[in-house]
Image (cartoon, rainbow, N blue to C red; front, side, top):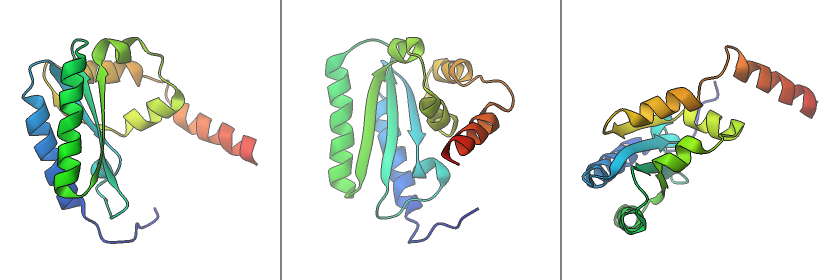
Length: 145
């Protein structure tokens, strides 16, 4: 495995993640918070951002905006980019996930799951036959070659 270079600022990113989780999970209609990217990999440098996805039980544009503002406020306070997306659970549940989305979410970490709905959703959406990813990598490798 290739060693990442640069100063690892993961502790600062973990603190930002904890703060975001605490603030956002306090809203009753938030059913889940998922972290991705460097925060999950354990490496974040000056070029990194905090990647977070918030899932809401019901369609509520006002709450969506309020949560996005929390992300913007934390980005300004910490001086770190916060890429915070807010989605509605039912839309994510019914959407067909691309291979890219499956790959990304297979490397995500569920930080908050009020009623276990997010884990159940991930189990369903990420369920692929044994060897699926290896076959996809080989296929794409042959295509590029």
